[in-house]
Image 1 (spheres, helix red, strand yellow):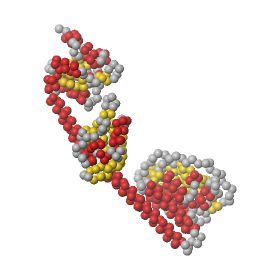
Image 2 (image 1 turned 135 degrees about the vertical axis):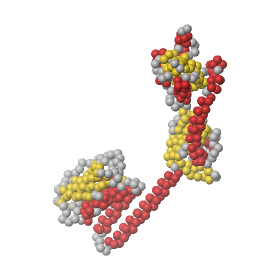
Image 3 (image 1 turned 90 degrees about the horizontal axis):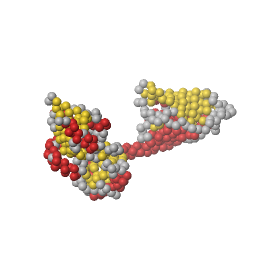
Image 4 (image 1 turned 180 degrees about the horizontal axis):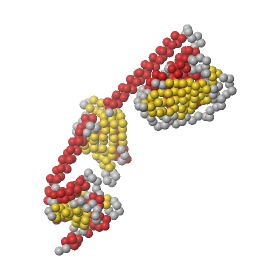
Length: 501
């Protein structure tokens, strides 16, 4: 008897696989129900010919059954399995199947697996095949194996409950609680949430706009995230404030509709309150520092009154205090962590009272530690004062070019700054060294393994500053090169002596 011809004529779908799960033969009925062609699937592995995602029930249940038959030589049955099939137009069709897997043995070992599949998608087909094939008996046969899946489900449920962040699943347009883990219930101070709409279970959040956000997620199908969002919850008769990081993630069905919302987040109340406390302390520190500088300025005015009859020393001292205060304000805005080099330069120049438009800046973005930022700001202030009195800024056409670069040096980096004046009156080296010059060359920057040198070129003062930047501070996006009007030509004024300070 020709069994191959017999199976080929059978109206029931049959397919034969080798132990590598490669398709070696199938009848016409199998091709019809799977909407496939013989050439397209012959020789291909089952999961290549009919793909399914590993980790899904469809993939894992079928693979476990086939592996069991190949390894043990025992027949196996799957009472009901969903396994979607691609149609002729490439779209996936939702299908349900019942299958038996029978070993075909040779020399006592499984050589092939005969799969008999029945499409039970339609209810009338399910009833007919249940009567004909004994689906109830098959379901009983796989019940023991399903217990493993139940155990996995229980483990996932325990993991959901014990997650450190708060999690909840909401269903329907009225956002009914389907699940809420321990962290969520502790956050809201309520245990009995399942089955209740959010507006009923947590009425205090309605007026705070959270239900409106949930409605928007349902309507748009797009997630909504919040960081450090303030919320007030009624817990044990008290209205308590919390701050949350959270996301409302829409749950999408296969047709694209939103059936619910997955809520996940963390209580960051302690972090936000610590930040608020830090801001309060910084503001208090800033207030006290400014008061201290005001007291110092008042004491200086009284001290200089008798010995500084023309008030010049008091003016210079006040300007230096102003530069120090400006550097302090810049660091305050950066929470005393770091400040951009360019911001430090512009702050010091503005404190000297000059027009920032007369400066050109070129160099990468570099951050400075607070102590270095203050020292550099004071140095730049002295250079500005010198330029206003004797240098490029004493002329209407004068300009100052400031460029800088950074090079690695061991575990640190070396910052090089060049201050170049052009368009001012001709410069001559001073006969004596002023206090400001000493501050530049031997004062502020030398405290940080740095040095500054002054070159009194006739066409304009040139100052080179080098500093070691410890701990290799972060580099960020390059700054834009300063755009300015063309530099003016040197004037025909008679030479003037340049003196810093």
